[in-house]
Length: 146
Image (cartoon, rainbow, N blue to C red; front, side, top):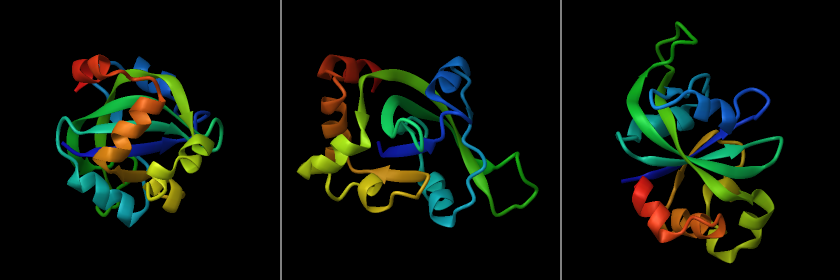
């Protein structure tokens, strides 16, 4: 399993919107960056991702799951752009702020710190575990959603 981070401006698409989409999930559409698109092409069904509120909040608020592999983005006719579908799995009990992430030496190399503008980012397993710990996701909760 691989781990990812999805950034969204909450006034456009929030974690609450994602949860309301239910088990079917929704397209992570509108991405127009080649590196972010390529990241989505690498995703596998069942991979997990942090849901990050950008611009407002600046914090990781939820955990999502890849529920449909990369496919053409329905918001464009341009065949270069693809997306995956994600569904909400769990709230992060205590949202983890960008400020906290930047202050944690264990997360100094995390893409969120080094590649701030990238909307779909890889997350290393040790980073995933540390952010989950910081957010109050206990091992039993993680087992239930993993």
